[in-house]
Image 1 (cartoon, rainbow, N blue to C red):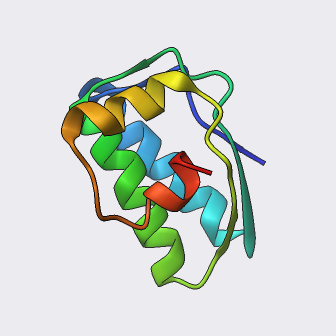
Image 2: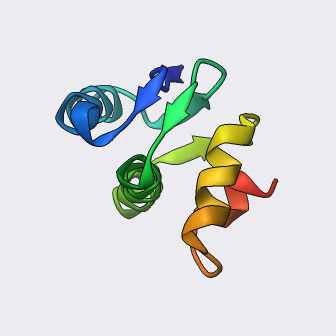
Length: 91
């Protein structure tokens, strides 16, 4: 299971990217746990969007139903209306 960190922010972007790349390299199916997320900024929402886009582009199966209101609020604030991300956030 890939656990999202407590903070998904610009300050943590490189660390987040590396953790995801390492995990995806060793797993065909990615189960995402967002229960620890406490803070997300606009870059963090973009990181989540790029995570989903990246994983689908390399044909990884994603098992995630966003349960954290913080992520949902961030997506709404950015006004994301047409994105692969919405199938997980609005599930």
